[in-house]
Length: 356
Image 1 (cartoon, rainbow, N blue to C red):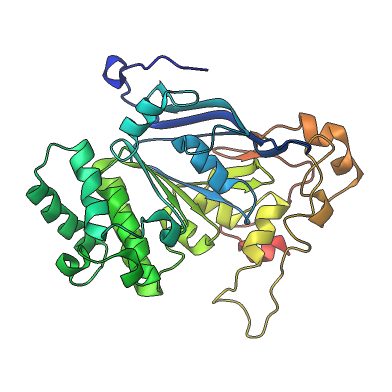
Image 2 (image 1 turned 60 degrees about the vertical axis):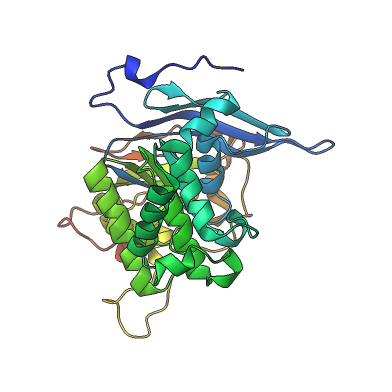
């Protein structure tokens, strides 16, 4: 399917989301094997200056969702359905030329594996300045000066010297920061950060998160933060979407989500995190099983095999195929037959206590 390219300036986008994802599906097909639905009807939107978090265990579909939004999935053996719109422009099925023009300038992504994302045969400076030369009217001297400033802003010492070095000469944390500098170079309208602080120590992690926060506030950039680090979510995100087995199963404002998780999976994620205000020696409460212990959504709730709240109706076709993401109070949506119930207590009940 080829979508006609609509100039973004031809539509008044004031007050509308930068990114709109509607019923996005991603299916992987291999000859002789059953197709795998990695993303199954995901919908969300991100407004200018808003930070939205996609949270879940490895394998839940977070990274595949981001690659589908960026148009970076392979054409062969992959089917992408639904709609992804950037400032009103449809990206699903858009020509490669259109996507190349948008990437780097209007939308950018920070990948979680810096070693495989950087070209090992090209100096860091060339890779950073390439983005500026491609999308902005700059001379090579001006691009080099901006690249030096970008590396300095993300905390790389002696940035002028680092521009001449190759990826293998940098530590893992420096490579990650170089990737972040490349993504921020053109101040994109949409930034997707896939585990951007995984390889960084705590001090640099705080510096990078502050840099991302400044970008969102100063430029009105829409930020999608993909992470399993709930500390990052608590400090940065405005709204959080919890994913499991390819679907969003809970969506809420971050304050409400942390105070009163309703989906047992969300409660399990929060209860698994060590708490500074907990009793010394108190045991953690991990989610039993693994992310591979699922059933198809068409047969029931995918989380049911691991859920302590599961009942018989969670293992029926009706539960899986017809229970949508439903309204669960102001600003909240939930996909669950038997959510965590709360007594009428003061706002701010601890998530760990509620999950127990």
